[in-house]
Length: 358
Image (cartoon, rainbow, N blue to C red; front, side, top):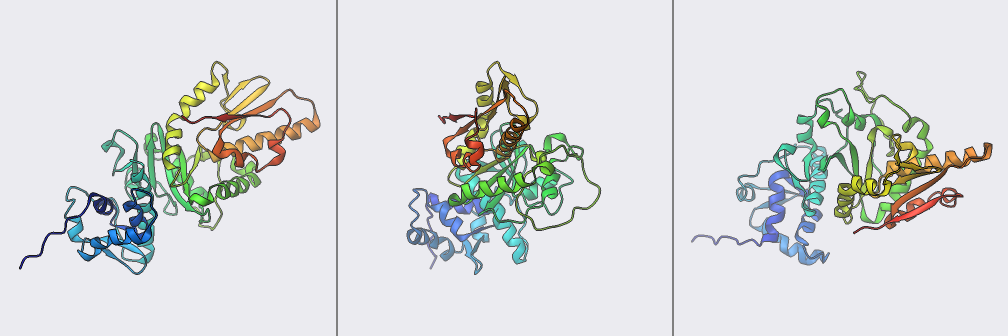
C-alpha cells in the first residue's frame, strides 16, 4: 500500500526554503518563521511544525537545532547551500548564528545570495560566501554576513544582550583599504540585539567607547596589518574605522533598514545650503555658530562623536568664551540614549530636534 503524500501549507514551506540554503536553524527561530500572524503561541506553532519532523523533512536535535533532510532538500533542488555545516558543536553553533541573522533578513524581505551580483536590491551575503569574495579577513572576525543596503555595505552581527567576545582589530580587517577590491570594503556595521535590551546595549557600547574615545575615535591607519592580531576577550567598543554602526532589533529591523536607505536624502534635506563638515567627529553641517549632528538611523558611532564633541565644548567654555553651540537631530526612539549623559542633555545652547518617520 502506497503512503499518501504529505501536503504542506505554504507557511510550513518557509522554514524548509530557508534550511535549503542554510542547512540548520535553531528550533525557536523555526517557530518564528511559522508565526506569520505574530501570535507567539508556541504550543500552536509546535503543532504546525510537527509534520516537518514526522514526515522526515527535517530533524530536530537535542541541542535545539533543526537540520534539513534529503526529503526536505528535494523540494527545492534549485537552492544551493550557502554555508557548510561542520560536524562539531562549535561549527553548528556558528552556522546557527548566521542562519538566524539570515532568517531575520528574510522576514523583512531581504534575500540571501552568494554574491551581490546576483541581486539588484537589498541582499544578505553570509560570512562564508563573503570570505571568498573579500580576501584578508582575519579568522577571528565575528560578523555573520554582509548586508547591501543602497550604497552601504554593512557587516552584520548578532549581539544578543550585548555580551560577546569583541575583536576590535579583527573586525577592522573588514575595512582594510589596500586588500583586494575597494568595492568589497565594508562601509559600516549593523548590530542586531534582543528586542528588550536595545537601550541597555546602546548605553553599554557608547560608554565603553567613550571611556577610550581618544584611542578609538582618533586618526588610525586602515591599511592591512602584517602582524597577527592577538585574540582577546573584550566588550564591544567602536572605532572611527567602522564609519557607521547602526543598532536594530528583530522587531525594528525593517524600520532601521528603511532609515539607512533614506539617511543620505534626509541628511541633504536637513543640511540645505549650509556648509558640510567633512570631519564626522565635528558634525554633519555648520550654520555658524551652530554645528549639527544628524542621526536618523540610530548610528551608535555618531552618538559617540556627538557626546565627545559636547563634552569637549563644555571643557572649552570653562577656559574661554565661545559662540559655538551644537544641535542634534534624532528619532524619538533614541531620546533615552540622549539622556544617558544628563550634563550633555542639559547643556546650554543645545538644540534637540525630533526626526519624524514617514
